[in-house]
Image 1 (cartoon, rainbow, N blue to C red):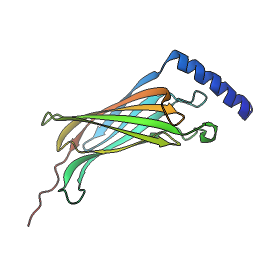
Image 2 (cartoon, rainbow, N blue to C red):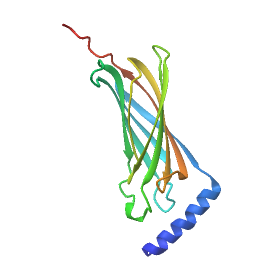
Image 3 (cartoon, helix red, strand yellow):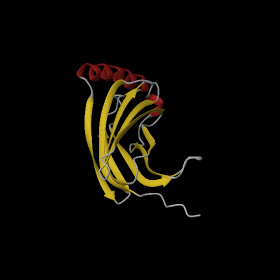
Image 4 (cartoon, rainbow, N blue to C red):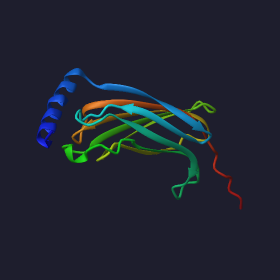
Length: 171
């Protein structure tokens, strides 16, 4: 099939998908202490492109932004597992809005952060500071086409991890 026919078929399919609504997918997580890999499925907002999975690596640790003292942190890094996405056939990069909700089970504190990115391949990156303890998290990715949220597709990843307290300073 020629590139023009594929692009034309994609535009027709995009219209059909937009008429039908958005997709919603839930994911699974595997945990190992202070590191969790969570995988969640997403349909592609470009209908002529294949569906993909977000593979989120969620790591707990601690760090500091001077002049503030060290604090307990969660680092979120995720990317599409489909390296066959034909970036050249997309009219523009993917727009990804991620909402990362967390609940510290030990302190009952809760928080949420939202971050937006535009990339040629769907990508998720964030850092949050929930404090030390056992943390339940939900990461909701809304992925759209054309620098905006055209034909948005929603995927949800969940998990639990242990966030360590930073070491105490000694003088």
